[in-house]
Image (cartoon, rainbow, N blue to C red):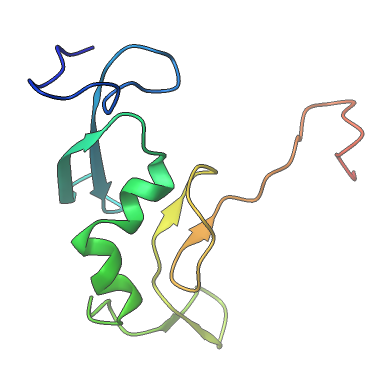
Length: 112
């Protein structure tokens, strides 16, 4: 929780009601920060915050210069490197989301 900046009313309220400022960070496979953005109002969704970052614009314009496509181990078809995000982010051509399923024993969604 924060004390809202002067001359702002309601801009920093998040869905849980306290006022907040969003810190968005992107990390690599080794948990090293590669991008940090701080200061967006708490009322904006994670996906909305992401769409307003320079990182998003660079990613969508293919200016990120990710490592070239490589085949996965024991495979021959090259696949691109791409960021992976949780469910709060939109699925885009440059962003993968985790497969949503319930694999708990006895779940009707579990196929095996």
